[in-house]
Image (cartoon, rainbow, N blue to C red; front, side, top):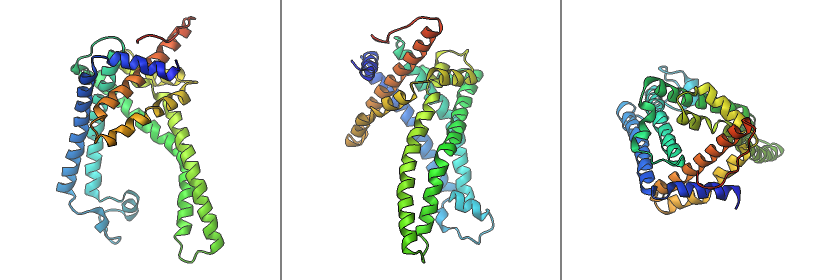
Length: 292
């Protein structure tokens, strides 16, 4: 049996008899996301009823270059900023609690719904969850700039040349080729960027495991434990693509069942890496078989 098949087999075994409960937990998380999105939508309708594309370049209440950069009015930016704050304050700890729910499940226990609120129980635990989310966001943004600036810049330059009215034929050909090259580079850079971010994949699970881990320790440990497995982790996540194709075909009905199956597999993968590295640290070896 292949490595991926073994991981998924263990995930199915852990979910056996708990699929409906896992679907209910997923629906609660989805409800939180929908509620926050609806709140942002109605706030935009209430405080920024005029679409941003009605703005004139001569208006002075907001710097023009920022209007061009963001494409939003000040009211829209304020609402979006407030929604982002609520995302980090509410959804980040809640979704980490969802990961905690699956971590307990994969450990062989029967998690209760209150595990979803695990990171709301105590100021330090809550602060760690929010700080972890901020750390991942900042690091993802920084690495995104590193990986994607060059292909995105090349693409924007080539597109700008194509939009020139008096462009010559040779220039148009060069710009068209440049766009094809830039798109290829963008796809490659995106794949490499995604694989690189897999270095942080264990940090959330380490925080779920114990309150003794700091965010800094969890991130450093994750980077160390995922060495040699980041590409494998990327391919493992990609192996669920077929399941997610069922979601639109079933009008989203399959999502509460597909998502727990995916998260359970990711959790088994995470526990395998953690236990494997810890076993190697004490000089032993551990094979991965049976239910986690």
